[in-house]
Image (cartoon, rainbow, N blue to C red; front, side):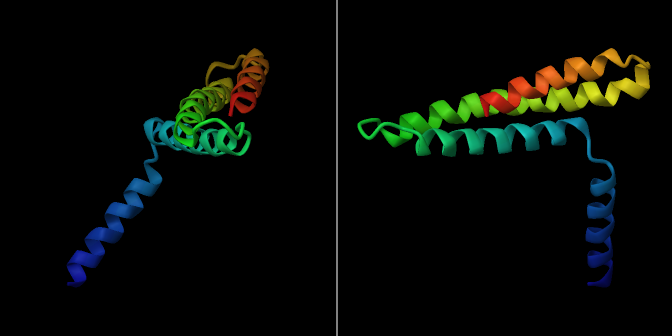
Length: 101
């Protein structure tokens, strides 16, 4: 039993440290899609169907979440490449993603 608990702890610890770009992208896309869908339902017209409106906001929010992730990716490339121009591009991409969500 103690070995099992130790194994679980070590697996969680290594996964926590090795958070890769795919996982970060999925978090951003997932959160953007959920908030986009909820926002679309809140702002819907009374005669619109909730399911259709939620799905429409869901996929638009996913696109916005992906843009937010890419802006974070651009910020990460600033020290790597040494180009400060990436900060302006990242700011514009983040603004576009945030406005979509």
